[in-house]
Length: 114
Image (spheres, one colour):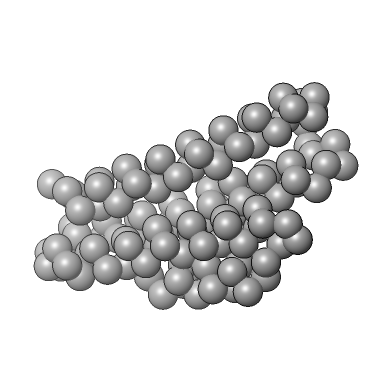
């Protein structure tokens, strides 16, 4: 059973849902059905969600591989927590106007540490 991986995936899912709702709310607010409609705030939200969707699946797969291969729970937890922290920092960096590149870079460093 992949208990640690499942728990990490659940936390990441909650974050993804929050990022998705941010995009949905900004689309409704700005009456934009596709793309960003030239709204910078919406573009940032779209990229925060998209970047999350691009990096998290491979991270979860690699963490699951650790657990499936019998790594101790704490060794599975460390890259999972690092991934969660990295994605949160990165999303905050993109969504804070003007974009905070130092947070984006720090978030990517945490993401790649997994």
